Image (cartoon, rainbow, N blue to C red; front, side, top):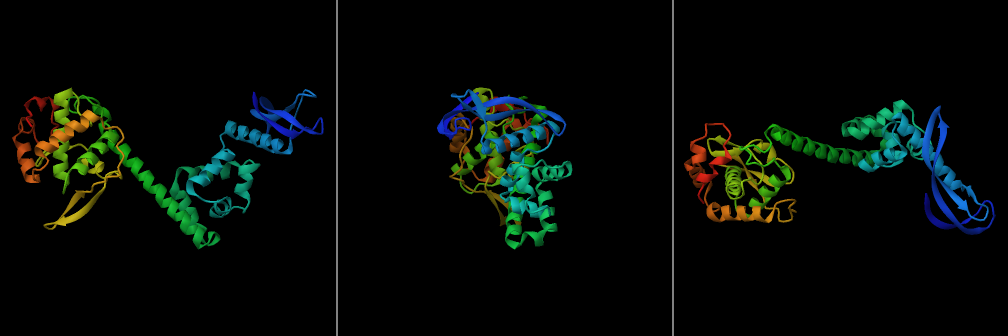
Length: 336
């Protein structure tokens, strides 16, 4: 395959002229394995021959080794480099974290194939930030205070990301078996749209706490179902003492895109939602915003006690057994 043309000193003509950079599929034997790899070569049209510069020889050598590593299930040089970039650490720092020779990571990234034992350690670090944390603590003196603190900070950041992923997955898992049922308003649960709805209601409301937020979400979902035969979020709501509560609501409001604070009211800890005016809505549609706006216009100024009282008068609430899911079919009785 032809790539770009360059001016190079041709090893056949021994003079500078335009040569064609090409990429060819080649086969070779490396460590007893037949390897297929893409080699880069220059083509001299005067002699009709291919040649390699020292730079291309080094690059092709690395391509052979990476093709071998992929074949036998080892991390490539690029994979190892990506581990460093993930944790924002240098080749020297990673070598010290693992108590390997100072140039070990440099060699693995540029020209040497790692052994299986070292590869397994690198894979563990790639997949588990806690492994890096344990190694950094073990070799704290080798790293020095500045590098150690930097690595610990990166580990904390990645652990926070991992917790968020696990939290999202645990919420989604709760809804897998109930896709598009009448208890979800003929809509598959959508976690990003749910986050959008919470932020939209929060931005449009004042002094918003958990109980009132949940009721405003229920009214928005069930009104949208009445209008369009589908809920907005796909949430499944249950009858509880203070009205409708969606399944996994406590974990949903713990997601990082939902800003909140815990405050003390009458000796009780309460969750108050904070307006995030910089929040970028992902998938909330215009007509869904219009449904929410209508709900807020009609009942958004009610106090928490008033909106609970209204909820208790709804047929959907009265006809549903305690702690059972509330059918969206009761939307025909909703009047706002």
